[in-house]
Image (cartoon, rainbow, N blue to C red):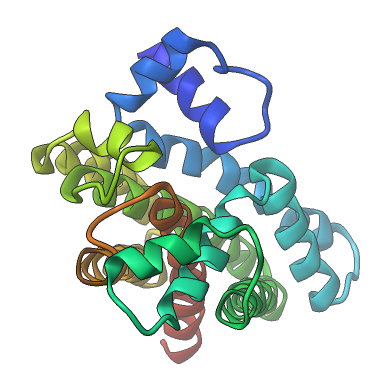
Length: 259
């Protein structure tokens, strides 16, 4: 268990642990570790919200702080998956043609647009969360922190579900992870993610919707990848994490605002 958690930290974050072969092998067989990392990253990403509560800080600055912490912790590797899928999405051809475009290191219009949408979606989602924290007092701060955690946990759980339920398009990172798991392994992934919802009690609706939005994003991306790419790849997994995070934040903020 400890080796798997170390491997998850080494794979999903820039924290210098779990980079050895034993940790990687343990992690590859334990998709339940995905959302565990989400709790840590989410809690740290929420630090700018807590710091801003001490003194007057503009919401836009707080939102930028959340985004910077996320990428400082996780790196930008997953954004490469977003760019590759964006380029593949605009290709007129079959799965082989799309996979060929994804192997090209140059960035096309589709990839550029995908990156802009994801980063803008994360920034505006963080801005909405900052508004929740400052507009409603102490209760709002707690709700905002829970929402950031739930979004990150949901994003990691979404990626874990894709690993468990998806089939690899070709040999590589995707096949290494999907071959070690079965659809039944998705149950522990979801179970580990559920406490993020409880953190929002007595108003858990935003966290519930955030988690559901992340999982729905994963289902949509997995289906698209199966039809357009022939299956899951490392790029699909990275893009799932990034887009599910954005979907979770945006959905959670909307629910909080309307409720």
